[in-house]
Image 1 (cartoon, helix red, strand yellow):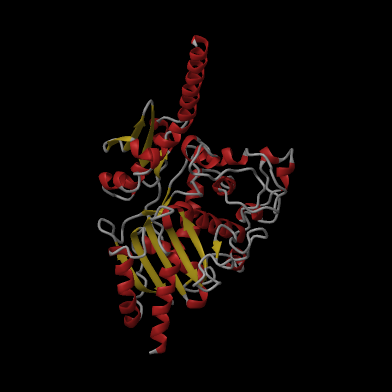
Image 2 (cartoon, rainbow, N blue to C red):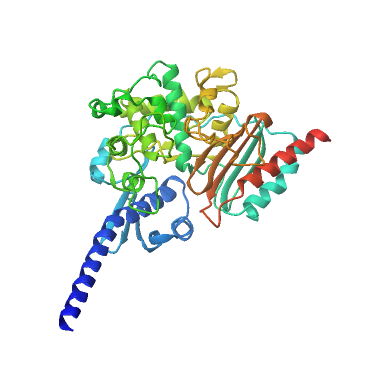
Length: 444
């Protein structure tokens, strides 16, 4: 009997020890997510901390974090059990998790950013009949939440004109909101601008030193943009996965991702990977002599021509923008980006993206079953069955969306908090209703 009890005790002790070790591996993710999310929401978006904690951070283990907000030093520290994480805000750069770097070191890395004018001509207002018909849809979406989820902002452009714009309480036209994975599409656009300028060749093998002695040397920028690099990756956000470790533990996110081994031949197997995008952003950054020169290029060659001012593209601790996830813009600026693609990469007749880039973006990756192009999602596979198949989109975590529907000359932006599975917004129904309303005007 005593022997059996001793065995049970040993097994129980090992189980507890194993559980603690596993939990210790999760804690940097739990605390890192909380610190980064709270700091960006408070210091970049200007949102109320209590509301953010009650809505955005009220799930899974994240809801057990305790937060300390230091407004003087612009830091947020989150703590859960025996672990804590700190995130630092810098004007113009947004929030960075302090992983492998101290706050003073990160502050010292910040270089002055040139001022940007806020004088951007507003987009013209749309047809009054269209505006009137979309008003009840906007109210149903944002005020009544009839399409589910918790939308923060809604913008619709028809033929380049504003036909709907609505914001949740505490959110306004000047509020910068998080892109989540819609940032991938902006990274794609940046690659397009650089390809047009002759800085990169999307079809050539990449000159990444770490890849030159194995099969990874054959990976092209096109393979990465189409999520067909062949690199091993786990995008499961509910575990101690590659994506969680990258976003919440690593100083250099792109380096972490490019260190993954090759699992499939490049260009043959599609699977979603945020690490892929951070490899691309790190590679693009490597074409410039400094972080300042790179950010200046993004501002001057991509953002400024579209009408985007004072964008916040948050960096990792190495100084590279987090191309997979962390871009903050105003809702109307997200809409302007969608309009750029609707207008074949041009703004007021001036070309921003090289000729043919939008068509390339919309070309399905060979193994994606018509669902994915070059860091853009496609509707060829019927993701939204009641929406025209030529629709393509920028999709982000928790329901961030830019929908581009060429056949309807339509751009729709929805930003907010729409967690899966039970609270996700009915985007198919929303787009169906918007299109039906606009089509009804033509019939009058």
